[in-house]
Image 1: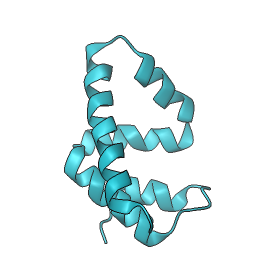
Image 2: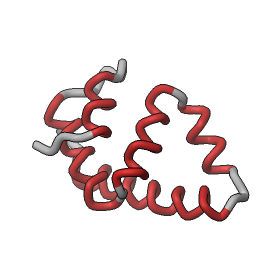
Image 3: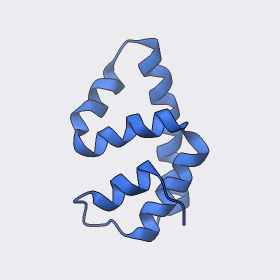
Length: 84
């Protein structure tokens, strides 16, 4: 089971579906699609979901590139971790 900033944030979240196996799988998907700095940036979305919306709607090239990587992570996590 993978561990790292995403797994830690997932396990600490108040989401009812969280469990160590699911959070480890999500971390494994993050390890494939996101750099360490991207993971640390994404972890802030757990505490402030509005920040994700701001990044998604941003016109800054840096935010747009991050959002593409984040979207790839979400797709990978959904395909890898569904049913856990």
